[in-house]
Length: 632
Image (cartoon, rainbow, N blue to C red; front, side):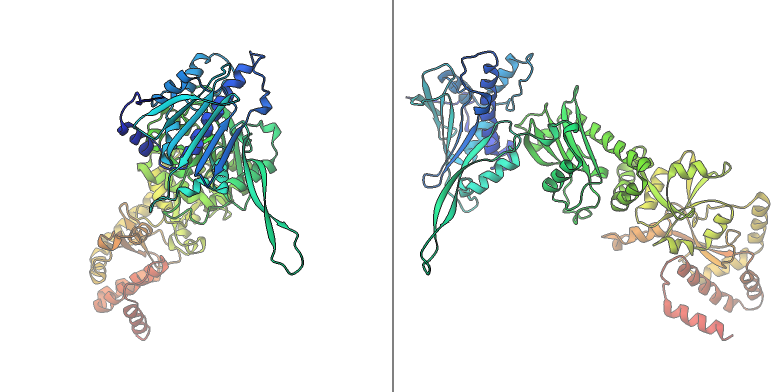
């Protein structure tokens, strides 16, 4: 026996691989099972052309053995095994992979699917063990050899006795420390759970003996007694549902898988199951939920799809596969092109992953469009649950994704009080209508009460009702749709007058400019102007806004965390109905009683705020004004 040094040499490299490439110690089991699966695949491949292999495909298996007393965990396979040279070459050189070489040699042959390709995974064993022993006998050889290492200092290889072909990897599990509980890797239920989590779809059975307690009959009155019963169990299901043909599966199969894997009590709203080949080869099984999880709209929520490499779980939640606006989607992707030994940091720069993500985005959008056109009721329920996320998607990233999402938006409208898409709105609006009109409020009912709605509806124009905080921000980012600009009916730019009406209103405002200025002065900095308007029918006054910030946007922005330090202020205008009797009353007061005019100005401003859904700044003053003027 002679001690050898790793050909990559340094302990620094070993530490880097263990501590950087793998972020969870439990990954070691996935890696070693994948290596064992590769060994079985190689021998199976050989059996296709060599009748002397002497082992049937159904006899290939991986065994796990636990020994708590001696603190050992064994992973045993009856695969192709390794010669002395292969042990030295594959395990003595960090990042040297026999699986990768095998695949290169047979790359033109069908049915060769080798999981591990980069030879790094084996060394994850040192995350949980202080001694690793590999006993192996290669197919076609009568000799067996034992490779042994305690870490970066080196390894030994010597002959050993092994009666059958295959490999036994023995890990001596580390002792517990203050920070780490290594005992968990000697617990049969923990190991079973890890196999189920990471290696459930390995194509060969993974077996382990389970020991349970069974009651023994005792005489009446005596303490109950138990005996140990050992049972050999297969831990993995082996065949991934997503690799089955759609014709083999029923809705029940998809729904049960979804509820079991993604912890939802409800069936999904939609299932997307497909496979691609070419630039990116992968299987995808995606679910659109009916309802959001309890933490969906919190900072604790983590988006992402499960990411597999050839049936082996790489990442529980890979956020790079989904854009934020589709973060509600659950499911998985199983890629033929991604390496099993890959870190989160490496994934972020992986071109294949970006290609997959782009295709997934198109598939999800296509399914939502299909739901919108083919099952409107289901889509409306979906939108109630997740529509706000689509609207944020339009607003975020400076509108980069607005063209992707705009046709998925629906809003309730004044027409039949139903949901409408932007396309449906523009398709049915009058040809001469140049704008898409909308109004903001806490509810449809509150919007109906706005003074400005009467004039817009009287013209035969439909109004979109925006009741969520993000709605107006999304439409501002869209700016227009089908060549029609979005206009808030509470904005001062709303103008439904004819040319003659506009001219008459300009004359009216000019003639009353001194009075309007006096009213503005009495109200103060709360408003930027007072003017007459024709946009009101039965209502005497309203509040409109100038510039890019509406009254609803002001409320939303000022309700955000930290807004108290830097508050946003909409430029408000008090507009008075030029045809209402109040207009003549104000003119008379300006001529006869300017002090009372000032009080009327404040009162009308307060009334306009209340009508518009805004709190009065000084409710006591407002109440006193009402009482005072009522008694005159």
